[in-house]
Every structure is written in C-alpha cells, then in structure tokens.
Image (cartoon, rainbow, N blue to C red; front, top):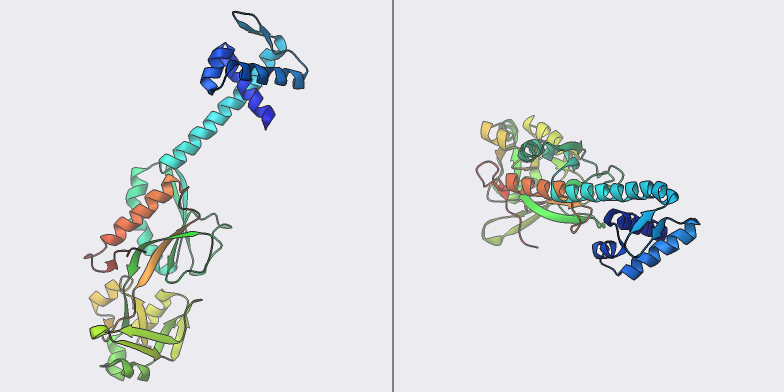
Length: 307
C-alpha cells in the first residue's frame, strides 16, 4: 500500500510539473514529496525524473511508468466519484425485502422515487420467511413486530392497526361476540411466527385489558392466507386493518368487538447501518414514511412513536 501511495505522489509531481506544486496539492512539504519519489526510484531500481533547479524531466523509464501511475490515480478518482454518487443520489439497484402481505404497498410507495431517478432500479424480494439479508444482498427490509437481536439497524417508520375480523356468514352461523370472554367460544385462524404465542391480548374501554388463550382451527405464516380463510367463513382472525381495508369496505369482512383491539404492530425499516446509508436507502425510507403517513384517509396507518 505504501508503494501505491508513492506511485500516486509521483503521478501528482508529473501532473503539476514541480515538487512544490505537488506538495501544495497533496497538503505536505516539498521535501516529503521528494523523499517519496527517491524511495520509489530506489525500490524500482531506475531513475524516473531528471531534476534541475528550474524543472523536472521524465526519463524514458519514467514516461512509461507514469502512464500506469496516472491511470491508477484516474481509476481511484473515478471510484471515488462513483462512491460519492451512490452516497449523494439514488442510483444503482435498490434491493428490498418484504413480507407478502406488505408487498402490495411497495409499488405505490416507491414509484415516485423511481420516476424521479432514472438511474435507479429496484428488486423486490417478497417472502414471509426471515431471509438472510446479507446473503440476499438486501439494502432495506420491512419487518413487523418484535425484532430478533441482530447487528442490523431498525428504524420504526409506522405502525399497523390490528382488529379481530370475521365474515358476515361466519357470524350468522356462530353469533356475534359481545364481550371478550365470548371470543373463547369461537374458532380461530392464527398467524404464527417466531414471537407468536397462544394468547390474544386486547385493550378496551377505560384502559381495560383482556388476555385470552384461544384455540386455533387453522394457522399460517402468511396473513393473506388467513384473510382468505376468514372471508370464507372459517373463523375469527386478527388482521391488519390496512391490509383488509378493501374487504372491510365491501362488507366481505367486519370488525368484531370494535372497542377491543390488539396492540398496533410496529413497522420497521431494517438496514445494515444507520451512519453509512447510501442515498437510495435514505430516499426509500423517506418514501415509505411519506406513503404510510398519507395512506387512505390518514387514519389507517399510525405515525411512528419516538423511541
């Protein structure tokens, strides 16, 4: 590495035409520049420069060697420029991982950013499993709920409302629950993941809390599957209000015990590091926050609370 540094110093001397000018460009002293060139000549075993009190002249070996040194410096400058571009402007490929249920929000959330930045492309990795973000080269992952410990950085961008839902047909057959305890008499469709358990906790009027142990008729790691089973009349399910908005409006689903709700589900943008995020990741997080804050009538997504 020291030899590469000396080669860069030599290229700078030739570029500026003198030791003094090169020293000013490099922010060092002429004697330090001269010493670097002398050591380079010693190590290479050839004379690269003929020096006089007024000017420098390349030897034949120096001319040939300078071509490679100048090309190295130019390549380093181009690499620095490319890196600055990635840091300062949304360019390159943005790789985003998302659960299946949330993926339908990515298109409308990221579309304005993609339209405004023609040098940016996107790859969406949609999977309910917790894929290896390093192995899949993911820049930004959407995660819900309690996160496992990791070296990645999680930034809360919103929260999803949850509600107990059922189809009108199911309620017509089994009756409409009027108290949380009556929920124990019903069939349940449950979302299962690493942090899930058999208990359902609901918050009600006046700060009341009910913690129920419910039995599942069907389970899945995919909320869309549970939604479809719920709409088919097979049981009650805790679903994201934002995800089933269309079904609630059409009447395919209704909210059961609307005054008793599960806690909202935090939504996180997970990235490798907070302090070295490229522009494409910073802009994507901002685009998600902007979309989620203005989604629908504005009441379906909750603004992120301060940590």
